[in-house]
Amino acid sequence: MIIILKPQASEKDANEILDKISSLGLKPLYMPGIERTVLGALGDERVLRQLHLDSYPMVDEIKPVLSPYKLVSRELQAHDSIVSIGGVKVGGGNFTVIAGPCSVESEAQLFGVSEMIKQQGVPLLRGGAFKPRTSPYSFQGLGLEGLKLLKAAKEKYDLPVVSEIIDPNDAKLMHEYVDCYQIGARNMQNFRLLEAVGEQSDKAVLLKRGMSATLEELLLAAEYIINAGNPNVILCERGIRTFETATRNTLDLNAVAYLKEKSHLPVFVDPSHGTGVRSLINPLSRAAVAVGADGIIVEAHLNPKEALSDGHQALTADDFATLMADIKPFVSAAGKTL
Image 1 (cartoon, rainbow, N blue to C red):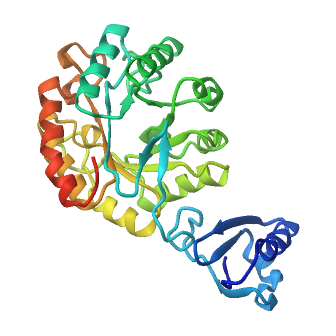
Image 2: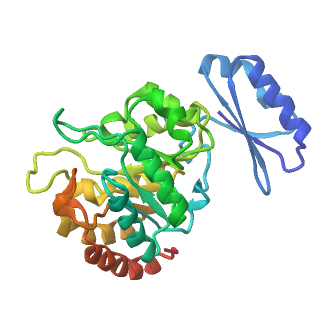
Image 3: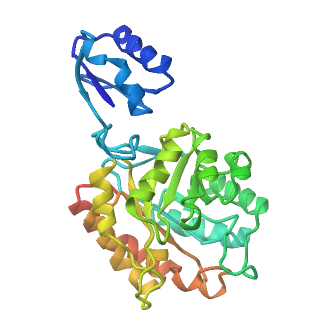
């Protein structure tokens, strides 16, 4: 339920209603605006009816939130959210690139890639310390040592870090080392993990769509994180599993437009996992800009042939420089800042 207060309503009036909402065991939301204050009440609809808020003199209008995902919906918040990753603003009029290796392999590898993306003006470094792999025999990441290398790269190159979390118990461990938790496609509906990162309210969360997940399921997964206390969520389309075998996945770019219409959260695209084909990353990155994405997350490596994971889809230094040059006119045409 959305409660819109009259323009002359005071903070005291708002607090009186918020206390009433809390007293019934519902979740209150306080969203002061420039012209109006908007309140929210989340919970059992039968209890909501007991509030009788239409009798309050400072209440102007009451609207139900019809979508199953309340907190991420534009029904509750019409304007776009802007999420900070280590001081880098994501969303709004910004188009943000996150780049780096699929997995952290060594100091030389990570520092080399960090220097490469820094030279191209990229503000955020990605790198996996914990890697969920389909095969138990594949490289699983360096773990804590990888986190330490990421922190060292951040300090040396002034690049806030995005890294994947796969275990709810690692949320507090990783808190010291990363600026943004990445929830991978395989863990999109790991609800204990979503709640764990939701409790780390001072960190951003990049939530990737599951390979077989509907858009409603993705939005409800984001709802778990925000409901746990963390509003700093970024949605990410990374391709879905279809009958097509020419590419690793099918990059569902119409999802970007749909998510931007239904939710106020920033939306990213991952063309690296979305295609699994190095030559397709550039054109699909340009398409992501055109369809309204707030940024892309791509894999880059100085020597993809020697990469321990996903080398076939990692961009070389030359590929990456070309990508950054090619997306600039698209970003400008979209009215955003790279």
